[in-house]
Every structure is written in structure tokens, then in C-alpha cells.
Image (tube, rainbow, N blue to C red; front, side, top):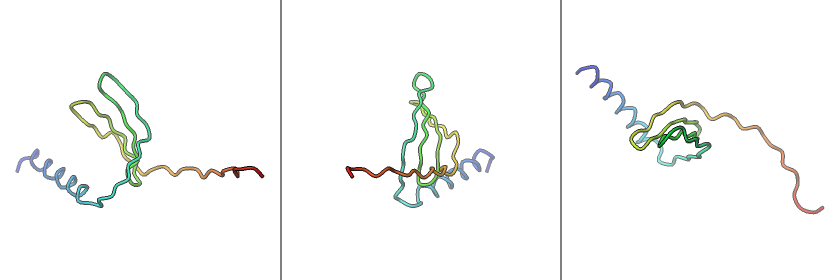
Length: 82
């Protein structure tokens, strides 16, 4: 098997492990930024990972992924009359 075939086989294995993983995935789109004509950058939280990717009409490119940053705890003021 040539190097390209081996690389494709590894990629296919990784994709298959993601696809056959847990069926319920929670995705929250955090930011969208147009970059150029037809190219947009997205930041999304998928399960507990932050994913940064760019998309055009013909391609999607994963730019980075890392654990979702912890959000600071906010204390809310009591509501209502009192």
C-alpha cells in the first residue's frame, strides 16, 4: 500500500470512530465571521470540545479543536418586587 493509501485508511478509521460514537451530540454555534467572498469561519462547541473551522461552497477546513473553556460562574440578582 502506498503512503497516500495508508493515510486515507487512517483518516477513514478516525472518521468511522467519530461517526459510530455516541449518537446524541450537542452543538452550539458560538461565533460566525465572514472572511472573504463565500468563505466563513465558525466557532462551535460540540459536546465538550470547541471546534474552529472555515467553510466555503466547495470545502470545509478544520482549523483547531480543544476542550471547551470553563465559563465563569455568574451570580444573578433576585428578580421580582420585594
